[in-house]
Length: 369
Image 1 (spheres, helix red, strand yellow):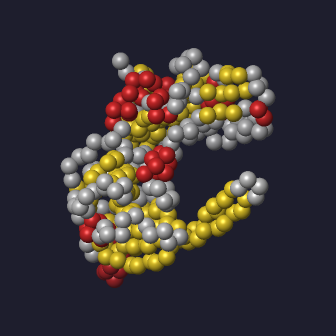
Image 2 (cartoon, rainbow, N blue to C red; image 1 turned 135 degrees about the horizontal axis):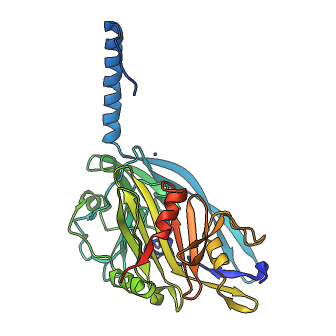
């Protein structure tokens, strides 16, 4: 096999697919002995200050931070092409305190006249969710909720006007874009949520809709049936061993029909809510194409999922291992193993559970009946 001719389609369907489809216009013992009364008074003052600061942290789980960003847009033609840089802003939802927050069913309880809910995404491993509304004219509204996370951000480009607003007493920003669309961004600092509302219909009062956001009835994700179908196709795999305190928190999946005639995936994640630590599992179909046609090379499939793989030089990272009779590669944080007979590759990742403990989780993986 010549590495320079190697092409692999692996993980080609991901969470960004939903964002692109449904958001059309881009977008962290000290023992007190016997002290003098003066020192005791000083310590008491320090403790009081610490309690105050801790209290503030507990009631401010997320903050909004705005930064300037640029994106290069390539305009192609028959003979020439040019690159244009568009400046915009990114609103980040930064964690003030690293705690686990349940996503729940949080969304606007008031819908503008003429609009109906047409799409509800599965909650993602990053704890965000997208809800889309449309009217008969084809106008759309997109609501998105974020749990503070390093990947949680709203990007807005082509800004014509920016206004600071208040959403139920909370700070927000209303962006008006040159093409007429609007983006409203705000945060619930106490509960740890970030929000965005996007609209192309100028008649919709985004602030009124935003202020109705609250816990509501549980919503059924639009692709719930497809998720079950993907699990049936690929099998329902789960670890029979998890470290103390861990439990399954969510599942995403896509069947063959949605990913093409050969690609499907299942993603699961496990959380210890006491200390907000996670383990991620994904398994998906794969194809490897060479100049001689298809091959089922397990090592190549696994290498693509391990950070440090260099396709041009053929360099791989990690140690070759065996998981339940299948070839695998392991590093401290990542373990991948492949089933070439069924064209499925498995990947376990954690930045909290590592080494031998993560390997124990991988080796406990079984298919449910």
